[in-house]
Image (cartoon, rainbow, N blue to C red; front, side):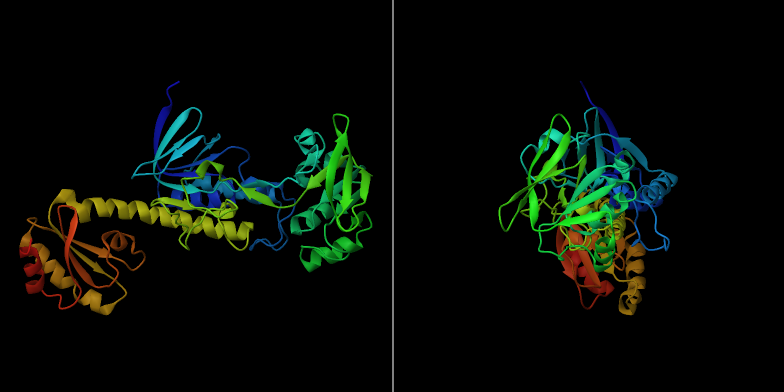
Length: 409
């Protein structure tokens, strides 16, 4: 089957909080933007019952509600959405290719915001009870179905304890398996204190999952005491796993640089090792993975992609100039000395009157074009011919000096 080819300025892989924010920035910049999401718009944040640490919502907000607002805002700015899985990518060259089962999308820039997936315990028989057979990763999704039931939560981080407390509103009993000594958890102190006082929550300390059991549907979680080795079977009707996430980066192995754990490596501009390819959100290697930090990543990535596309056009048209000779003045508009030289450049532009292209590139907000040429000091005059940097002038920038480097060609 021949795939349908579509062209976009920016393709964003992943529709979570990072991808949606990047889409808002790109759409608002009037870039033709597409977000590809294989599951649920909003990503893992939609599984969180209550988000209380996102600025601007003093009463808190559900993850689904917050992500719905993100989604509406992105659509307001003309962002396209397709619910489909990405099958292959090719990021080499100026045109980036992202392929799904039916389509081939060609973009000038790509933002990878593919997020992560829940980490499994690796215990025996686990695979038998995934997908609605007793093991769940979403309290919001499955809380009502567990009304008056006995359930178990695995983990002691913020997600585990906060979602466990939410589940007590429905379940008869919530057992919590914690691998640490009694009283020690990985969550914040406020959540810990509240959970310890919750009469419906019972903590089973120093334990990990040994195996899952049940006849077609989970009915027993066998825990193992990590100190004594004792096996502790516990009858439950559902087990919720909140033990972290793994990045969705399998598709990018050998393509983008990543850590040993599979997280994508970026700089502060969200740039990966390939020009025009950015990463944002939980998929990248960073200190804190939260909706607030994902939004920051997405904003930077969207802005960076916008600048990259504009600078690429500038680089091709004004700098390379189809191989014809050109004088390019790189300057910082915030620097008085740089501004004082603008009349000199304008006089040269009038003097050569199209015989030699004369261009001005302001590096105040972004120095991407200058970096591509290999220039890091400003102000600077560069003479480019046959797509090559011939000579630069960083001091004594006068009409005579510029004429001299032009004649040197």
